[in-house]
Length: 499
Image 1: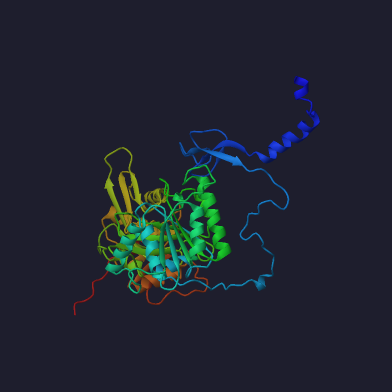
Image 2 (image 1 turned 60 degrees about the vertical axis):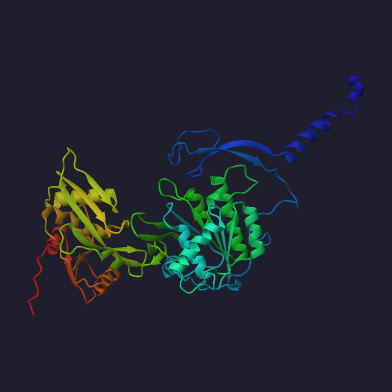
């Protein structure tokens, strides 16, 4: 009986064809662990990611390997699937062909406007104003452009309530209360979103947020590295092939970086961060990557009841509450991209109550504060080893460039000596370990901004001008060392005679 049932058995045929058939037609399934912070892939679970050092960030994902198919039936991934090389001179489009933005500060950060077919990532802390800024932009552009606003976190009714509030208070002046070209939809499935885009054919697409969008063909949950990477890649292909400008909103991690930062930063064209203290009124829209404009460009906004309002002169806004002739206060000129901004730096020294003196910065790099305090102690003679030192940048902004070293040192020395810095002076310069001053870049733009706001004196390092003349409407005091600069900063001004 056994021989009759196996009469058609062919060992060679089974051994040669069966493994090939099963390996080709049946996809393999395996699990892997992906870090949700940096995207590192591991075959086993690890409590700490060896690449970024995050704890409990490895999440299990199920992966289905697609069978490798050859021939004409193979799937082709690409922007169009039928691209052809062509000479660069025959490529259509102009470098200056940008879409006008009704918000000037936003257009400044983007480099002058929206580039057709670009994809922009906007990140920020929860409640900082990302959705409000995007809705203001969408309402302003709905006059001439067709805008599709896709939300995965709010309903259409909630978005309409915010839009009505913004219009009634007066945030958007020249647009109707409910623009007909602004379309709202609540959806998280990317396939359905792409179908809506195909039906509506918008000029601008806003996705709020990328962490809520998912692809049904992936087994991982929405917001994981795999979902974020694949969804952003398909949105990029949509932007490049159709010419639709896409803005996507991204959440940030506890460390302040956009979730899956390296994954998203390499995919998108522009990365913008909306920064600011939630207890302060000012918000900074900072560009950290821009393929169509300058990086590190900053736009300043003020949060009001009517939404985010533009601050066209941020230096004046940051200095309007300044207390003149107060010890521990100095004025620095920081460069944010191509824009000089004058900010007030406050310093305070107090006798320490413990064995080790504290150094507490707010808006200044901690290591930079340690360096400046050490130079003041060793080169100037201030006894800061028994003093707690506190430094604060008014307005809630962050200063990273070394050109503010001289202003920080002057604020600390002013508080330690209880002598006010000249009220009409700005201090610009980098401090070296030997106590010397070094010239920062873009000095002409810094001095012009200080003179425009009414400052009469600028204390700067002594250096070769290289053929550039100083501005004539502001007095330039050059100093080689930190001690000379502090002596000039603490010079007593003569009071003008009474008329």
